[in-house]
Length: 355
Image (cartoon, rainbow, N blue to C red; front, side, top):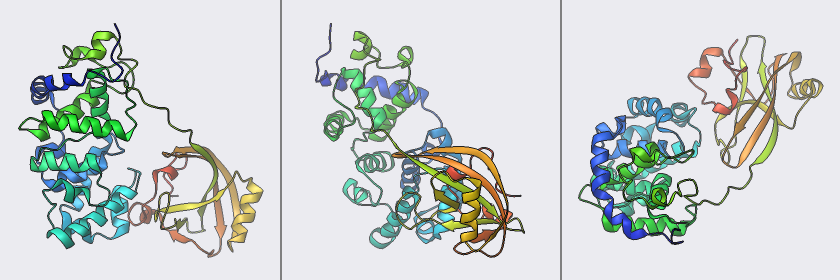
């Protein structure tokens, strides 16, 4: 027996009852669920866009303690905001949060609007995020279609549609809108929870724990390993980089700010240069900064993967004399307070940077 290529979408009508029963029994206790105000839901959804739940929890709690509401976020100095986000990556999320907070102050009196379209108009808020906030925080009948939801619906209906395409997201959103129960926020969270905890993306799904096992066509037909279908990603571009952990005679680390646009925009970073430099080339580069190199010693190589590029990093510990040009010298205690530093530069064998 084979599945229809377009999927048995009518089966989605059967999922709300068993799914909600399972969710109300089994839902994880998460800090943003205990008190789902619009602001708290918004912050959690933005954090979770590229971050696992367990990794996001401590960041979320720290962020809410420092910036408990829209006015605090709107007024926060950028370096403080980026420091709170440090280690989460995808820093444009933090900048868009602040842009959106300022628009909410300007246009909505400091309160997130109870409207899908108004939420969707905020920087950094797409269809999924607007639907999640609208349904969870305001109880509005809006779908919230993320990768977890697409995976669950693909397997339940045995659909071979490519879940990476915009077409299928719209299609699934329209279908879910028709079956939303009176608790749309719980339903959307239940679908996401099922995808995150049971209908897993990698490895075997936990079909024995699934409340939709009697409905799921992928289980019935033995297609769990084939579904969902997703076109392979393009290969990442590999970039060679030489990173200098450059300190002066007082033990201060040389930092510089990255450009205001592009990858890791506006973050602070150790001095780094394109290519894979030898110790002699490093010494020459340091001299070119108006410094006198005193010691150049190798550090372990590093690697960091971004969405579209991968850094392969050669690293050197350098001690130098002089004031230098184009850098700021950060004392050891200042690194953990005043300078948001990307996790790419916190490699094993380099960190802590002090000393």
